[in-house]
Image: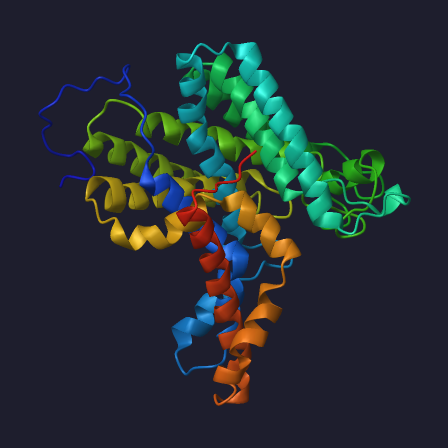
Length: 383
């Protein structure tokens, strides 16, 4: 199989056309892989640190935490990947809506309602129990809210701009964000201060964002960082267009791979001046994680939908089909305590340091079994 399309192709490249949309297992599996790390997988890996004499396990465990400020670990990639996957799915859903006779206004209303629901659920998630009589203590920004806003804006861009136009939007947003942080002075700190206390993003949030900020004087999910973050969803829409096109699989893989490599390369070079920073959602961070997302999509699509190695993907598919369910469920259901109650009598014979490892593993398996039950019952909760 010529993954990068370097050999001859028997079919003519019909880049303008698209084939009838079908659900790609690779998209659900990649979403499931992402959600597994959020819903217990990362915790299980962190619990493994120092328990063995294998240095690589300890290194992987260190990748499951966020840097204090500048820098990058694999765990920083988890949320950007989800924003990207939301963009990958968008061309499929929007074009399906258009094909059934829905007009742009209907699609806007649908995505707007979805955005409001996600913002509401995000506020509940971040603040439960919500202090409704003390609004100053409520954190109004959230992961779910950011996804809802990004998808709504990307919907508007997708339905009204060509691929070139959307690419120009991404480039303009990332460049203007870069310029703003380096050129607009912050009172008491000046321009170009990228510290926690002196950056423009935090200052704007302190002036305009009501309620509680995560770090007191700063919130990484605040107002200004929404702009670069939504670029990940727009980039994902490019990947979605590639996957639903009529091109040969080799050409699709080639485009996914080179888009990923280009974004990673530009992001790393840009990071030499504008540091890779998840808290700031720096332009270099967006391109680095967007490029990684293209490459992960390349790998999952190649293995699952092209080479058809599908059995291993079922574990992740079960999670990916109910991602919102488990994201909210993991917040409100104490899987760790349930794991302790069910399995502590079994793992009690293991050395004490390993108890937390087995408890975390048991919780992760309980999460999967719940989702498997919903999968078997064909219950998929979506917004």
